[in-house]
Amino acid sequence: HEQNYYQDTDSFLYTALEARGGLAGREVVIMGSLEPWYESVALAFGAERVTTIEYNHLAFDHPLLSSLTCDEYAAMDPQPRFDVALSISSFEHDGLGRYGDPVDPDGDLKAMHRMETTLHPGGTLFLALPMGVDTLKWNAHRKYGRTRLPLLLANWTIQAQVPL
Image 1 (cartoon, rainbow, N blue to C red):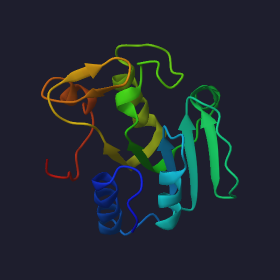
Image 2: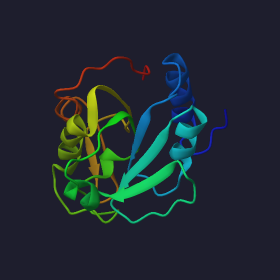
Image 3: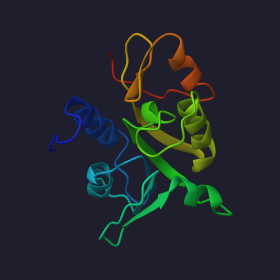
Image 4: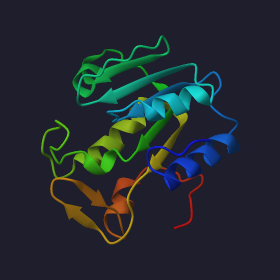
């Protein structure tokens, strides 16, 4: 598999997807994406359909890809739920205003909380975050460490992780 976007993260993701038997027949949501790299990865691993939820309007020219803005998704009743979610370098930006999102110091925590209802019960979230000492680099991103990481992962069960 090619490494294109986040080098080692891509390799770890491919290994995790292969270990879980791919994505055949699954509805997948990509959280935050300006380039359709992870959408392509999901399709390559057999996803039935891929929807991207992003602050910005996106247009894809592929019959199995669609996109919604965060506001469009929030306004849907009922909101669609997904079997699998990929969040690769996304939530650490939420609430910082860099990508068109509203400024909110807890935007990342709220985004993770929303994932609980975005996935079907028992769904899987593949999550990649910058780790280290808890840091906020305004308005670029956060790094997660001993203080903020447990807040972000509250209510989630970690099934597997890549060693740091």
